Length: 225
Image (cartoon, rainbow, N blue to C red; front, side, top):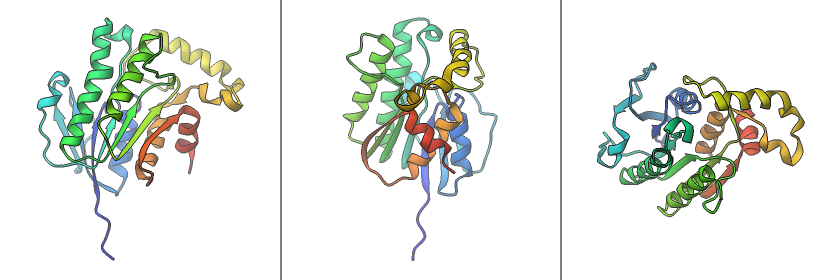
């Protein structure tokens, strides 16, 4: 029997709470022989299978990759508070994500994973959720063979940047999270590392088409041994 060929991945957002864990998982996985990371700044990690492409995300459409890829992992995202304006928030969470998806198709990717958010809905009256829903739909219309929408609840874990409001929410979640059981379990905070493990597992599964993974399912997949 011929050995199964290894995969090449494209990852954006490798310095974020989920992306940094996901990158390590991909590097340690023998199913991959290459991972291309798009980044604004150098990474602290290095490996023979890792290729870092330094870019300005405003010019994503002009990026050229060294080879075709199989899978795309989009871990890009910001907050309105950090972005300062709604326009800049939308640029990161809508335009960059959509351009990344188009780039993946250009280089023959069949699978795309998008970190979205719980409550994403293009018809939402909440601007944040509305933009998340809009980008989910826009990428869906591109026609990937496998499209996985990742909708975590509040992301827990230590970020390299300070987010004061988010840190307060994490503190509160640690205090009351255990009360959220049954159908409310998906509202518990979830560790960025657990989301990364879930995404890594989803990538290895054979299911095709479009799938949405809410936070409770991400917990189950990310905590499986």
